[in-house]
Image (cartoon, each protein chain N blue to C red):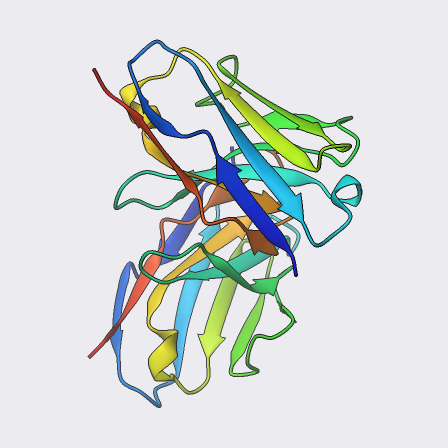
Length: 107
Length: 114
């Protein structure tokens, strides 16, 4: 099974900051990597699919990059509504697996 | 508007069974693969099972293989998860999600406890 190691687990940042969240796969996942945002009490929301494709309706301050085993989600200028928990997800091979999550909190 | 509405959750004793349903609307259900994903209280996300649009391909997480069965009825626009031999570690909020998570339901809670 492919293990997804997400870092950091907790990130404190301020409005306007540029933040990055990382995900490392235990083997090559061929860019089949999605990013989700989850706010407390809500279902997750798809932000980025297949490494760098912005889901419809998601602001352009969100971007993704990476290849092979290493992937990054970047928020260029943090907005108040961006606080929550972020998960990466590989769908290169079964069983699909999620990262453990990064909680993004207000500094 | 795409909607996914889960139902069938509740409190169940260890070893018993439960069947979840997910009613889809706002899109052509028969064109999309579907998934069940769960989240234990205060924990992260765990992919549980996937089924292709025509039910030709089905996959399970190792933690539920042999105990859970995913199925769908395209005529009823409904996804199912039959859960048997339930364990305390199956306690979670169960989400159905379209394709690779482009849309999610609000989830249904399953609590396994004596």
